[in-house]
Image (tube, rainbow, N blue to C red; front, top):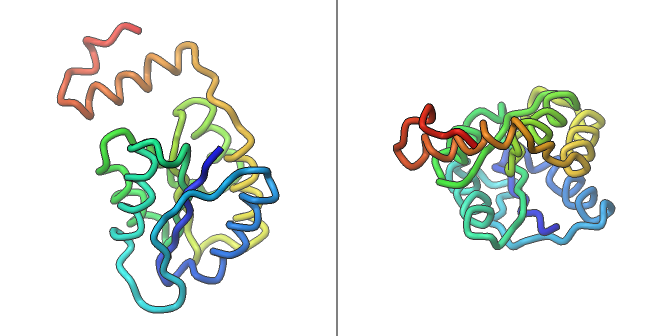
Length: 154
């Protein structure tokens, strides 16, 4: 898989470790804007990664900011993106298994590096279950296009 990774300045300390984890897991890195130690705006980083995912230049994306909230809100504004703010390995697993999340958002300030490593590993390794969950993801796509999700049956 091709993974786009970016952080704002708050996630600069974990950026390289996430890059290393992606590579160690056998994945390729997609081009994405980066911000290391200079102050930068998280919506810019979120937009770069999210558009890469939405346009198919990346299969998935990983974003980190201080709380993870700003990245998640920004990423979810891009049509085709299902960004999930994850705080532990269970939320990472369920975001993939049930919601087919294609962008992972995390907090640099609230999670330690060992937990970030676990979340990234679980999220990269977990597949979407499909089945009844596919219908629900299709309903999310319907909402995105302005349709009533109740009209989606499959």
